[in-house]
Image (cartoon, rainbow, N blue to C red):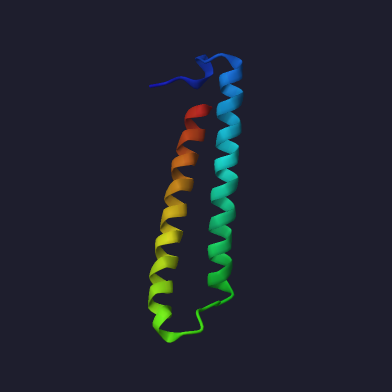
Length: 78
């Protein structure tokens, strides 16, 4: 198990900055997808509706899993 606190200070700061950047990117994307869901924004064409529904489910799942991984990494940080 890698102890992040045992690393020298510049590496800890770099690691923290990267984690913050990734958390921001993931949360913004997840919030955008959920906003579109809640506002009931749909494609204009009926043939794109099924594809959009599948893509929305996949993106919510992907962003949620990535956020869970980052939360796990942050819990190792403490």
